[in-house]
Length: 206
Image (cartoon, rainbow, N blue to C red; front, side, top):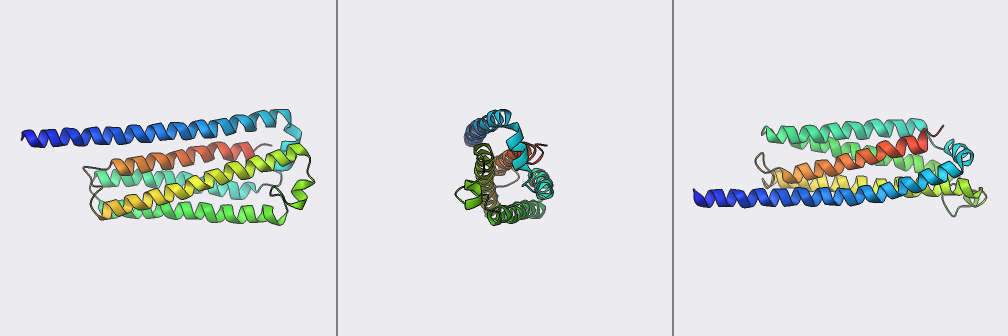
């Protein structure tokens, strides 16, 4: 009995350390994007007309669809945690698959959106981009950099959830030990929150 209590205590400490590490990591991510949001806000304040004109090149419909996709994916990952806590492994796996499919959907839509910008020569270094006024160049530079960085986080989040699925299959993540799924969910919610800020800043600037 004593050995069980000690083992369980050690397990709880490991879970708490894992959660603390994830929260610390998320904090650094928020600092990174917070700095980028601050840079964007300053440039937008100083060049409001140029930023407004440049924003007309963005596809609001695609941005809106991607927002709905990510919001729905946050719901599915949250439900997966509840399903695992209730011992419904099959439903947990299904919800995680849905979340990963939503991530892929987001990336596919972003691919087509970026492709349109490439066709118009709006990517930094392209001919049309080089003929823009400096403020509009800054808008598109920030757009590609910030949405690209966010896209990278979407990929990392999808891969992380994939590893969690593997852990569930191997019974390393269970209804009694689901901290990795919780951490994966926290990371995915961060991805969602970042986009919730990116969407209005770039697409709804009007």
